[in-house]
Amino acid sequence: MQQRIRRRYAAERRFRYIGLGAVLLSAAFLAFLLITMLANGVRGFTQTEVRLDIDFARSALIIDPATLQGFGADAALAGADIDGAVRKAAAAQYGPRGADLLSEGAWLRIRDAIRQDPQVLTRTATFWVPASSPIDVAAKSDAPAEIERAYESLQQRNAVRTGFNANFLGGSDATDPTMVGIWGAFKGSLLTMLVTLALAFPIGVLSAVYLEEYAPRNRWTDIIEVSINNLAAVPSIIFGLLGLAVFLNFMHLPRSAPLVGGLTLALMTMPVIVIAGRNAIKSVPPSIRDAALGIGASRIQVVFHHVLPLALPGILTGTIIGMARALGETAPLLMIGMRAFIASPPGGVTEPATVLPVQIFLWSDEVSRGFVEKTSAAIIVLLVFLLAMNGIAIYLRNKFERRW
Image 1 (cartoon, helix red, strand yellow):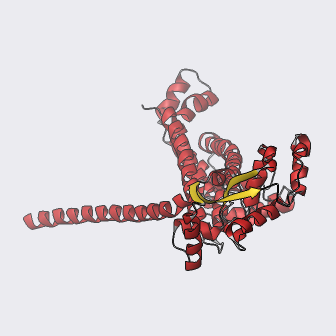
Image 2 (cartoon, one colour):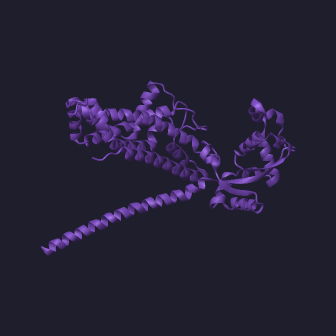
Image 3 (spheres, rainbow, N blue to C red):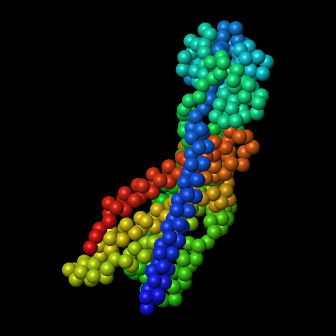
């Protein structure tokens, strides 16, 4: 008997140690992922800039400051060769290959400065413009020897600096890694999630209420329950094919729009909300229903005044799981065309847009090293968005939670 007790205690200790080891191993993998992502992603929120002096009086840029007042400003700036003036100034200041030190979108910074202060055209002005991707990489990590020498030369002339990249949070996609931004994809994700939540949550909750409280127990109800359980396990790309066939080819809705993405993700999220809602409603004690019916409440009053408020925390838990899955999906959105190059944020749910997971996928496939840190930075933004969305849902769940 003593030997059996010792073996039982030894087995219990081994199981406890194995469980602790599994937890530590999972924590180590998570820490490695977060540290690697933060190490690369933090650099994505910074930008290297090069000083550029432009003598507008001697440049080939001919713009009358008077034309930059009122509605004609955009037309006057569009017709001016600002890019040529920037390249000429860079060649005069840094040599024949001086333009290679600047980003392809450096002239946009000059254009915005001219729009804000047209009198800058009458004097020599100093600007800090985005550096090229190789110079930006050299400022943050190792680079080829030629690029390192160019960066050190800029440092010796105090003509380079690195600071916070506000354009990354407020811009959209671009071909140059120094000019890309995450706001376009972030807004697309936000609009898509709003459409998904507006459709999946009420329909899923009402479906769960009907199946659990009103639906008769027969063969058709069993078929519906089995179908919902199977839909929750269907691969997400199948929903993408369904969205392509129904919403685009049959209903002719706008391609690459958050409306179509939200409809597709709502189909994928709805079964999860229905299953979680049914389990939450089923967990409400029958005595709650009996007491409400006993004091004269109608069936609908029992459901919406007593059962549903008590089941709401569990329903919100299922909603959190479904929305988190929808936020990270890429395959179904690729099928409906949300992988397009979007140079400006969408203005509504019917305009072309992309989402954060698809944007991360597209940037990870780029050749330029400058997109590596942008990809990690976009992952950080996606995680923050996910944590914020889950935090709001958890707050609402705890607020409506009741104990009996």
